[in-house]
Amino acid sequence: MTEPACRVCGKTGGQLVLDLGAQPACDYFPSVDDPGPDPVHPLQMWLCASCGLAQLLADPTVPEEPRGAEPAALVAQAADAVGRVANGGLLRAGARVAEYGSPHGGSWLGLLEDRGLKPVADGDSADVVLDCFGLMHAADQAAALAERATRVAAGGLLLLQYHALDTIVRLGQWNALRHGHYAYYSTSALTSMLGRVGFRARRAWEFGLYGGTVLLAASRNGDGGALTGDGSIPPLLSRDTAGGVNDPVTLGGLQRDAEAKAAGLRDWLAAERAAGRTVLGYGAASRAVALLRWAGADRSVISAVADASPAKQGSRMPGTDIPVVGPDVLAAHPGASVVLFVPDLLAEVRAAYPEVEAAGGRWVDAETLTPAGVSAGLGR
Image (tube, rainbow, N blue to C red; front, side):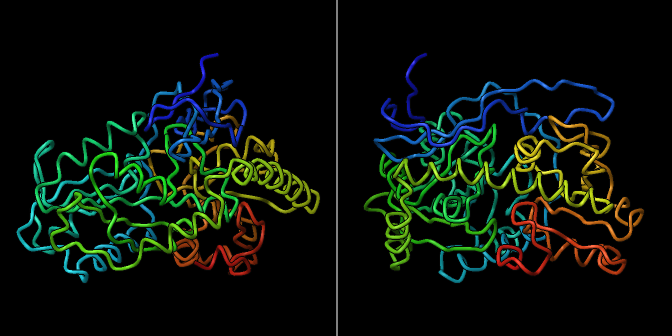
């Protein structure tokens, strides 16, 4: 087997830190009538010893995920982020803006237009180039970042939002590893990547989304313009060091987290079944695919997964026979235990479907297996 090469620096020295085995593509939702078996592919995280980028080792899958419903938490975070950047004096009315968005949906352009910024055509230069969870979907990380940097006009601003690797390690978010997600950024690795394209990280804002995300603002070396440092970057770099994001042994703890959390879900589902309780899921998210497969879950223990996205309804969870249905299934099963696969949805689903708790049911975090409001992670 050819030794892996880093997606940024091209070096071959590195170490496998997480191996989830053969998994179905987490963006492939077959029809509920499709009996399978679903094709499976290796799902592994590799840490580059040279530049420190944690990355997907290989991905033979073809992205085709149906567009999901945009969570209210994501919408609220976008508005918060735009407001913070604007309050920093970095969003000038009349400035040109280009956006690289996530293929999973969501856009900040409307919010930016409301502040007087003008979107440009694909490929045109812009005063503000924004990437919100888009960069991680590029197989060639070096080329993708270079493309974004090239489009930043003189004196302009590059904004990059990412799910921080120190969060993934600290919270044991092993199922952040997915096909189609090629990179998992620590602030230290991303600032190094920016240096390769002649940019310097100047400011950062942190958010509770996904347990801990960062919006990083960068500009060209020697061309800060209105973007000057505010002391927000060094603490993130120090946190990376303290959290061991460049240590393969530390990252290897994600393997133990995967095994423990899958076993916990398997045992909990068995106990719920033995007690005669109906279990439903909520959120047909890609992060749930490996968890369900490792837990050996099927429709005998989870009757269905509800999801608000019409594009996913009528399909089944990859690698299982669990159907994806509309949220009306919640009212049809009063008193059920509802496993929430996306904890950030808690406030939204609680408000939208009060019948769950009104009938004596409960929302349960898929990873901590604690009722809603008990886990600190659910209360973010």
